[in-house]
Amino acid sequence: MELSEKEKENIMRFQQIQQQLHMLLLQKQNIQTQIAEIENALKELKKSKKGEKAYEVIGNIMVKKEKEELIKSLESKKEILNLRISTIEKQVEKLQKTATELQRELSKNIK
Image (tube, rainbow, N blue to C red):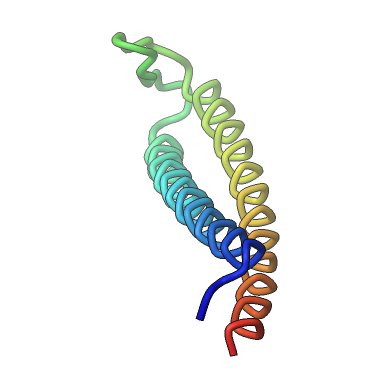
C-alpha cells in the first residue's frame, strides 16, 4: 500500500510532536528536581536560628547572606519554576491532543 504525500507529512509531523513531547517532559523533570532541591534548602534554612547567616552559591563563589533574604530568594525561584512547569504542562496537553488527532487520522486512512 502506497502512502499519499499527506499521510507521509502527517507521519513526519506525528514523529516531530513525539520528539517535542519527550523534550518537554525532560525539561519538566529537570525543573521538578530543581524545585525539590529548593524545598530541601528552604527546609534546612527554616530549621536554622533566627538572624543566622547562610551562604548562597553564585557562579563559582559562595556569598554570605541573611537567612531571611535567602528564603525570599529561594521562594521566588521556586515560584518561577512552578510557572515554567505550568507552561510546559499546557504545551504537553496541546501537543498530546494534536498527536491523538493525527494518530486517529492516520489509523483511519491506513485501514
